[in-house]
Image (tube, rainbow, N blue to C red):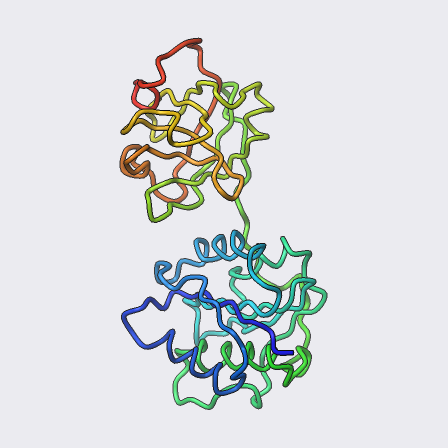
Length: 283
């Protein structure tokens, strides 16, 4: 049985790079289905792409995850493949694979992709997605090679990690988190979870004090965008179970001047009642 390949990269769509990798896979494993997770990540954004793979992996069919965001291409960084309970992960050893590998149960074998039989010959060293990672993913998907055929095993302790920031106490009776991801609509996912707020006695429907960029505002923990008026801000649990900032009919990143890794402080509000239409804009 040929395994599906789920493919993520920062190659964009204006050049031929994504199509070329598809072509390499099709020549080696013509029966393999390739699922494009996304290719518009900012060039070299290992952090953002790693979190996207982490968010996606639970919804992808078991098989091979091919992830290529590789600002260190051509250097001494390793090309690796990992075997996990979910399937195989193929990509650069720069932390890109680490969160998703961990969430599916970890790897029982990680190898350095070195065997020249499973690499395309090339004059340059700048397109390992085509020459190294694509072929490795294809032979694993087609069953044409076992993972330990690709190269020697590596010590898991030497593989680059990707550290996801933890929520901290803010010293004001609340928590201090940060923005992990801003989606196409301007919604800002944070690393704060519902459990973090519930530990402070905050429940859905409550008003909170929010500090972003040194500015304090009031915002309400809502279930849906429809719980506030158009143009107002809200805090809600997003589709991945994290707390996110949103603006109904607008963009939270623009309203609150947010970028990835912006600090976000959340704590109980001292005001007990506030009209819901004012939530998100009160100073």
